[in-house]
Each structure stands twice: as C-alpha cells, then as structure tokens.
Image (tube, rainbow, N blue to C red):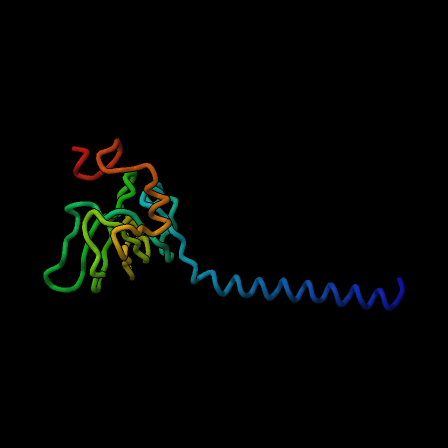
Length: 153
C-alpha cells in the first residue's frame, strides 16, 4: 500500500473511532435525563420501568382526587380508559388541574404500582391535549367497555 494512502486510511479510521466514542459518551450522559411516556395501560401491564424517571398521562378519574389535610400531598388516579394508575404528588397543582381533564405527570413508578410524581402538567385550554395523551386515548371514551371510571357501573 502506498504510504500516502495508508496515512489517509489511518486518519479516516481515527476520525470514525473518535466520533463513535463521542456519540457513545453523549448517549451515556443523557440516558439518565430521558423520561419516556407510558399510558396507564402499559404501566398496569408491567411495560414501564420501575425506579426510573418516566411520564404517565391520561385523564384524571372523576372522584379520585384526595387532598391531604396536613400537607400539600394530593392523590389521584389517571386513566387511558384501559388501565388506571394511582398518582401521588406533593406540591402545588396547576390551576387547570381538575377531575375529568387531561394531565401528564413526571415521576417514578414504585414497585407496588403507585406513581410518585415530581411534576404535574395540565392542559392549557379547552382544546389542547398533550400529543402523547391524545394518542393513548384515541378512540376511547368514558362509558365504553373497559373504562374503569364511574360511568361503567
């Protein structure tokens, strides 16, 4: 092999190896900051990771909101009409948080299936629904078969 060609090949391989190492290091650093969205049906089915940051979204089940008398802890249930996840949140809820409305909660799923939220996001007007929630709820409505809310009797 010609020395000039050998030098170019070595340089090209060095660039590929260093680029791969940089991408690997960036991916490793960001993996702790990635929190994926899971609808309640996937959480109930065991598809969501335990003790990792995730997001759960759906509709707040009517009659499920329980506020603590001693602190800012609120417990409520979120459904996608196929499954229900119990959520516990300590803090001030958004003004638009209400039963029967869409929410996305960020937090950690416990081994017992409860979800400890660190942030709760509510819709910002009557027409908006977070894209993940809209996709999870597509074609489902209260009163339909499998809906765990109070309309199903």
